[in-house]
Image (cartoon, rainbow, N blue to C red):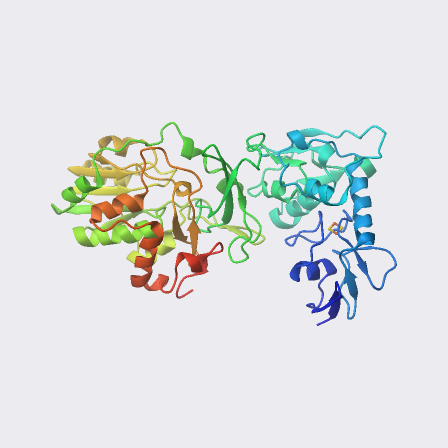
Length: 490
Ligand code: FES
């Protein structure tokens, strides 16, 4: 293991690491644009300049290998001057778009300029204007803002494997573009927007939707497949404006898929179910008459499933399941898109064993759906048609809701607290990012009402479940933190 001196302190570095990696690992800040831990290094922005003992000039730390006894200095007037000059060069053609740019507030160019530049430009000539156009269904480019770092180009080649993006033209006319007639349209295309360190690549769905400093960010988990990618939900005026990935080496690395990001529109659907009919107590009274069945979707949280299991025991009711599978397993670097389009099937299997089909021939039926894309599959409709009493909890109005005597509107995953167990058995928290419609109560509240137990928060219910479900033994919300934790036996 080579030993280097980083800002006067001796540190050991794994063989083959670059100076920038050593700085990142040891908490020494080095500004950078083109380097990204999930991509191959390119060494073209020069923002990561540092002073090293065996060179007379400043060196780009992302390309400089660590060697024994190397002395590295990441701060000081000489380094700051080098970074200032790099920024001055970049800003020559960069427009002052911050007041209208969606990246403002989370832009590395803005932040480093604030940190290193004096705010005055010496450039008196005309700036080069480059194209502004759509590169694909979800991605638009403002070419004049592009600093040609090529992160997006490398992502399409190395992670997406589709290679739609390339750098065209030379010198100060260099800009990212697509080949004519081949737009960037792959299942993970929006990661290039997160990767863009400036505001050149913009998510068309987020365009002019929110200034990020007014928006609220909530750390949660995507519910669109069984992978459970870690995400940040950006919300403004109680509307979800976008979702971006959070780094979790055990789940999704740095990426997430476009489908997961964009699968939030149903929350504000005109057909959203907002009014209840009857109550949880009516449901309990009907269920206690006997010959009652429960249909549970694998979109429900661990806490909700646990409460349903207790209700099923109290009512002596068989439980059948609603699930949704579509497409094939797809892998993009450290990201896997699962065919199981529900977030909590793994826990349902742990709690109930093999998932049984919808129970048929019951006099009464209680359906907890909540799968956004699923509206009354034929086997469920047949069971519901044959029942005398029907209670439904769902997100949207539909044929099943029309038939029901008791309707309890469901909270969407972004409107409640809880946990999911992903396909690998990792338990992760979801957090309430927006308020549900006024009359909609969290499922854990009315499920406990039906049970007739003391009302606990989702966290309280989880603690109860953790005492009795071996897979959850020893876990609590504190231990799950922001990155989740492996369940018992994984
Ligand atoms: Fe090192 Fe860009 S981060 S040259």
